[in-house]
Length: 360
Image (cartoon, rainbow, N blue to C red; front, side, top):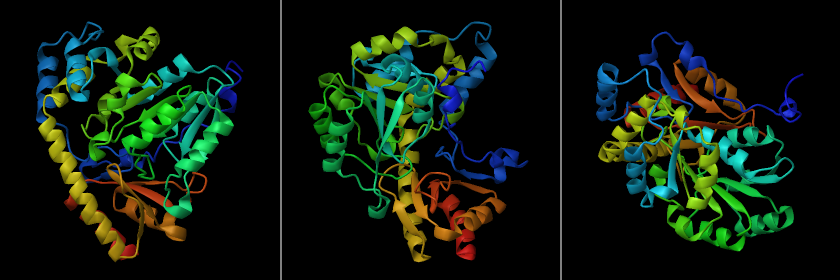
């Protein structure tokens, strides 16, 4: 009875299965449901954490203005330090964006199906969610002309777009993003670039010229730091100033900051793993097609979206029986036939194929 009137109506964001955590021997688990890196992060991360565990000031709050981390992010993004800021996960960043820019009753358009946490957070404060649906019958292709007409009709305050999109893999080129930023300069665009490293396509170069864009990124994917919950924003100084008013700088732990710094100092390690994943994608996609499994979304990200059809539950269950966990999208409207599979090494994906060849 104490919830606000919006929370009582919110449909919660549904996380993937927790079954992987229930397996006693975690080393026998192939966790391909949350698009995490399937190998450990850079060895420099472990070294930094060991050093802090031995010599760090655990009784102090974390560094609330980590100039080294911000400088490394600035260099990595090719922007001024005033145009980047780190947060306690990109999910937390989403919530800060919603608090900073949205009033109850205002509309957010989401290009869907997509990552659903932004929707849940927005509805909890009374935002109205509008969807522009990608066409499942056309491999979730994006129709720009229809999108323009949709925006003109709905006139949203914010548009949320993942690039590349999760889970469809749909990729939007920078020229297209610049066109919509210019065309709808009274709309704030949130570009979620969680999988940027796997595609090399980013709107970051547009930030100096456009006030109406905020880019969200994460260390949870290509950098392999999902456990530490670190994300960062890229936007104009004006937008950053607003976000910093409500950002709690104590909420990014010392371990998370140190891990992020170490990861940014070993970009070769990250890129080598990205290359392995992209090579694995080519292999895995080709092998899936050989056994008659339709691959729908493979353009962007460290994952593929496949269509198991009416046998979806049976196939996903068989994978789980072999300690392989994937993301069943059966609960999402219009996606009852689809499953998303995170990509790991070729050896790991061969393990998936061995099960699928028996089941299919």
